[in-house]
Amino acid sequence: MGVNKDRMLAGEWYLPDDPELAADNERRVELCAAYNAGGAGAAGRERILTELLGSLGKDVRIRPPFQCDYGRYISIGDRTFINFGAVLLDAAPITIGADVQIGPNVQLLTPTHELDTERRRAGWEKAVPITIGDNVWLGGGVIVCPGVAIGDNTVVGAGAVVTKDLPAGVLAVGNPARVIRTLSPGTSAGGGCAPVTE
Image (tube, rainbow, N blue to C red; front, side, top):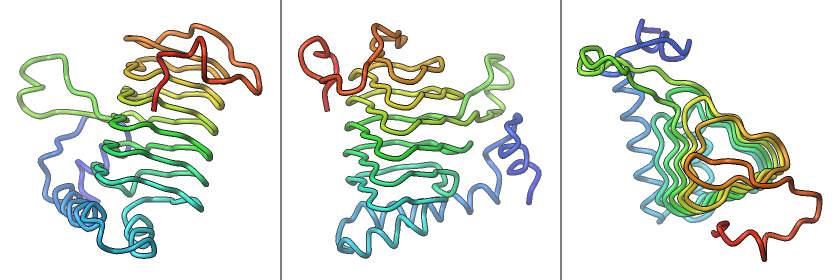
């Protein structure tokens, strides 16, 4: 393994303009293009996802278009649904639990860049893992930033930007996302949850 890929996977600063990483990226380009073309049928789409992703649970549904950085660092649990336009930048691992609902145009972004202008111009970046627990609902347009973990059974309202960890069983909305209440089992998403849309 090359030094930049090794640094990337270790969560250290690395240079993404690297031949080994470019080859990994080209693999992703071809597989995403085949998946997003939509002509492979259900069995063909599952085969492509199995090849693209690091781990794919049972009965996972991903509506194209779907984009990622590498694919192989993404793990998705059973019965998870990902709507149109998802962007999962997996320079670090992205772990999505079982029974997760992800609305359209959601972004899970593990890369971060240097604040120092000279190093940023030179291309240095690093990536920090994202973890989404079981039975989470991310409304349309949610952005999850590097290093964030979202606990089981949490709901994130449409358009929220999640910059810090969220505990299990809460409703969070806004930019930056903030917890506005605790959710009890069987809570309806109607009424006071107007910011949550799919």
